[in-house]
Image (cartoon, rainbow over all chains, first blue to last red; front, side, top):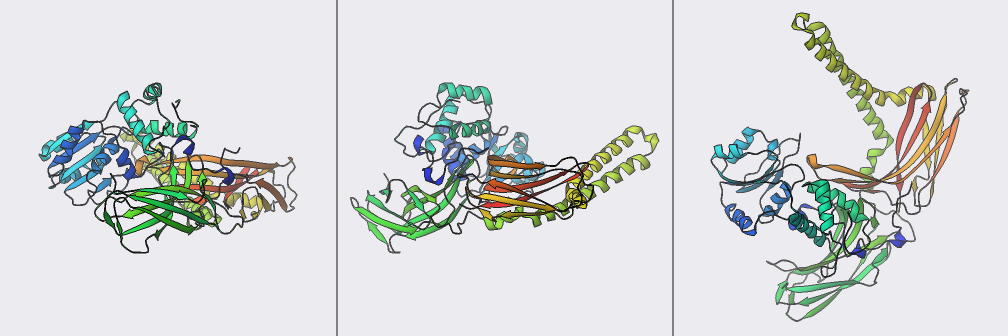
Length: 219
Length: 347
């Protein structure tokens, strides 16, 4: 069986026919993910967090299941502090050295032992953490000021903003139209995937591979 | 407003260049604000995009201002021409999970300010004289599939299997003979069950590792030759399998399968996922009548034609196009012989 591939003779600049540079739902490098991140909070609240994180003794916790946007929120805040270290704790992997810094971004902190977390939160620093488990009690005990955000549920407006940002980021000529996900498509996605954004991205990648014209995309 | 606006053009509407040609173009800079710039340079590199994490390579910079500082004056328009040889691979590729593209980016290096820049893709296709095109990191990463490495891996598997079997038998022994019956049968049963599981897993691993060795007892030394060594799209790969089965060996079939796959890895840690897309699969098989072998040496050939639009082998950290040939000899009532050989498809 031979799949449909382009021969060198018919090779064209990718996705140019739909005014895109690449498939909007492909994997993006961290720097670009920071750029496209849609934060599910008011701008005022976001600015407040950014200001407070400039001083030590403050923790922002993003909690949620896989694919709900914890890392996206971490990266969105990190875009404001590009110098701050970002540490990801992989499952079963040795715990990497956690650098000394006034602000740290730590992803998957549920994989740290409570003892390690306790000593971390006592540091003269601020933290933005992504976790599956709530560390509120540990933060209370450590006596630090904190804000907890639970990423659960997704409304059609937020989903529309997330999808539009991804598609616009991949656009070739920002002034020209691009494929779009209409209301019916967004409701279809929510019905099928709930708030699992990663699941949606995987599905939409395949859909966009087949998109042949600008306009509403059927999902 | 940016300090300047950049507009890039190539010397042709369809920016497709053959290896051996030169990429020619120009960049127009319209200055909006007075500014001193350290240099204006062009950076070319290939990048992957698609389902996998992005890989990149072949990065080179060309200084368009000959290392001199340039003062940009508001209202001024500058035209800078560029020319560089088409990179010697990888060739541009647009598949399902993987795309490889070349980019030319012109950047104005302004101190203490965001650098204005413009980037455009250009397409690299093989030239009329096929030479040794560099398809990513084929040389260093391609060795993972060599027969030598597979044999080494199987040696490790055999050792691994043995460790599992010994651990399993020890656990079973502890359960059956060392746990007193007065303590109840539950403890004995748990130990014996875990031991049995380990033993079975170990035997399975050992079976995989020793399968070819056992098959060779019936088949003698099996040799597989492919011609040509590297194939190009549209070419035919001829595979010759030779062996010398013992008298009475019952051969069922010999098959050779040519497979091309795109493999893209996304995420990291526990979020790491591997996405595989089949490009081509061509299985050929020769079956035998039920009569046992007479002890004569055996030679079988297969011809696989690589499709005209087949992508070339490409290797990067998280994105690959790889081709393999799987040869399998099935024996009745005896373990099969099977091996996987790498095939390099050149652009």
